[in-house]
Image (cartoon, rainbow, N blue to C red; front, side, top):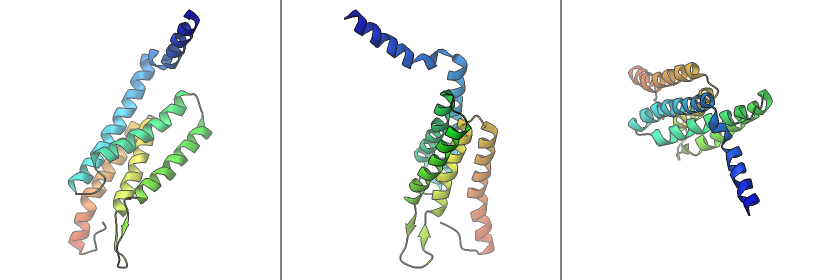
Length: 164
């Protein structure tokens, strides 16, 4: 029976071995937290605007996308594997975003396109954060917040039909 317990103990230690490197732990946590915070900022703005996808949705999308690019990197997989993961994220998030789009009965009566695009962009920000590109992720978040805030006001002043 001691062989079984030794095997179980050794397997558990092997599975948790990634937690022994403080640098890797710190890097991983920082990337995930940055993704969560940036996704949360976008989600907060959308929630305050009364949109369907709010803080939790945006945070989960950003953190999920970040984790999906962190894991292959930690396993030592290179560009091809990472490229396929990112392609999968883009496609999968497209389906999630499609669920936020509602077509009304009249021509041109479509709602949720901006929310879908925002969720898609939140995933891209999560990917950037997960890859360690915090500046790019932050800059994109600030630009996106500017678009969410200023463009509707400009359209309203110009008398143009406001999207979503």
